[in-house]
Length: 238
Image 1 (tube, rainbow, N blue to C red):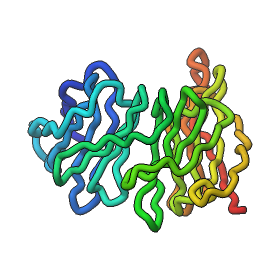
Image 2 (cartoon, helix red, strand yellow):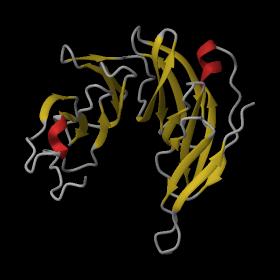
Image 3 (cartoon, rainbow, N blue to C red):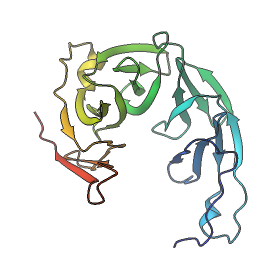
């Protein structure tokens, strides 16, 4: 079903909202939106009501938020942004907790959740320093740091949580670089990845449930009406 009336995301201008859906059986839509990082939540009837109720404002996470992800069980969310911002939000208690483990001046540009035996870990991209950090948000710890070959823009975690695939943008060219998260977690030396050049102005990647195919949309040359598309990469296990 496609609703004839779009859902209004209040207080979202300026900026582009970041969406997420709480896992089943909850299934409610979330949006991190607006200049003050307002976290909004809609009820599940938004796709059946002619005029859905406005979203509930859960919390203002602060200015400069650039990334938002849900924990694996949906009980917490994690957000980050400019100026070394990283924090969790607990949905049951409606409380926020700062996670002060990143280097001074870190700019969080993308995050992904790595599931581990000790709970969720966060793979965090820092565009300014061209680095990836692995963080334990539960007992706040910076587990590991890896220098990337180019400034990171977005990432996706493999279904087995062993790899991160980082989309990077540098001087008009986009790349994808694989990062061995399992080795980074264990403290094993992780060699720099070998970036693969992909379509220019590439965006957030997606990965298949098998972990064997990576999809990366790209804009390409805006002056060329036939440019742009989706890069499809086959992933081979080593």
